[in-house]
Length: 146
Image (tube, rainbow, N blue to C red):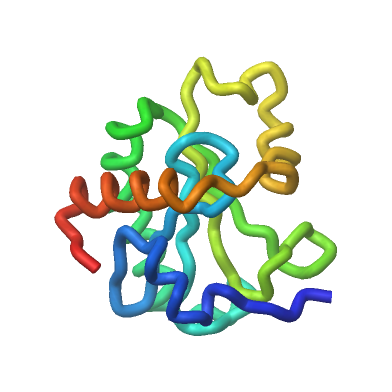
C-alpha cells in the first residue's frame, strides 16, 4: 500500500529545475536514461481525472518548455511521456506524476522499447552530486533559480 508522498514534501524543490504556479519539473532521483524527469502537479492529486483544466494546460505548457532544453542537453529526439495511475499500475508514489524520458536511436532500450517501463521499476538512485549537477545544468538552461 502506498503511503509516503515525497512530492508533497517541500524538500522535493531541491530537485526542481522548473516551477510554475501549478506544476513542477524535477530530475528523477532514479533516472532510466539521462534527462529522465518528472512533471508533477503541485496540488496533491492521485489521478489524472482529478486535475483542473488549468493544471492540465500547465502540465503540457511545462512539457513544451522543458522538452527542447532536455533534447539539446541529453542528445534526444524522441521521448516517452507516461503516468502510472493506481497501485496496480506500478504507481509507487500516491501523487500523480508524469515520467518524461528523453530517447534517441542509441539508447539502451532500442532493442526492446517496452523494457523502458521495466527500467523505471529497477533503475538505481543517482548520487547527490550527480543529481545536483543535472538540476543545476537544467536550471541554467531554463534561466531559473531556486
